[in-house]
Length: 354
Ligand SMILES: [Zn+2]
Image (tube, rainbow, N blue to C red):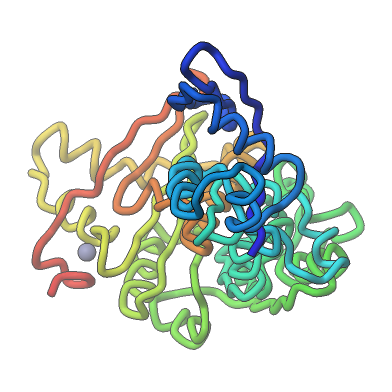
């Protein structure tokens, strides 16, 4: 197969070759005889097989194989046919998604494969309100192939501060029905199902988990709803990514069943705090203080995009999840400075304990 050099810049400086691919990382390669620079120039000219490169440069195929290994370890190479899905219409539709994955691809990590995984994925979205509205839009843009949307609410005027799936003409309509319609109009190739249902416990989610790769979003209404979702997901072995907010702080976390601690682990730990202590008062009441929903558009979009990006990590594996078993909080007062708060672990957790 023919090897391609990714978009990068290079320049010889003394005995070294300076390479710029990801602006966050400087790459310096030893190149006393200029052979590495010659290899870069040869690869840039057109896609080449290792045998063609060896012939053009007058070196052994073993030398070329060694050099290509080094460049691949720096994520600079791909195989020509791995860059595209192979269907011109799909390649146009996913042009920017493919370009994104080009940062993470390699000879054994085809960039098209990441998009194929998204197209084959089924995500259960819980809640199509504030965060859920932009989450659905992000997942649709990524080209997730199947979406099941769950909510029990109708569109109201007060939703317009943050729920951009809905139009004025939708007031009074079921949110999930309208959200599913939005997805179908946006990209008819996405299979979408609307489930207009109140979730009152883990059992209400059971029949929705068949074939689902990931649960994303978050239910409001009952302070224990996140525990129901956690329980249903961990029992089914399906990862969850959840987002939320308080005042001007956004927060998200994920649970990777069998690998990370779960939400119940953390909850069990808090439940043990002394009732009479100040810490106990604050911890017991933190969840209860959410009175009027103060979520506005910019915060809702922040939550939706953080949840969608963590979902992308689980669905494609382009990098490991960053919020597994951990609350990641971003405070807008400090310009989105992140604070990580790992879940307390509970070895005998009734949900994930062995
Ligand atoms: Zn647990």
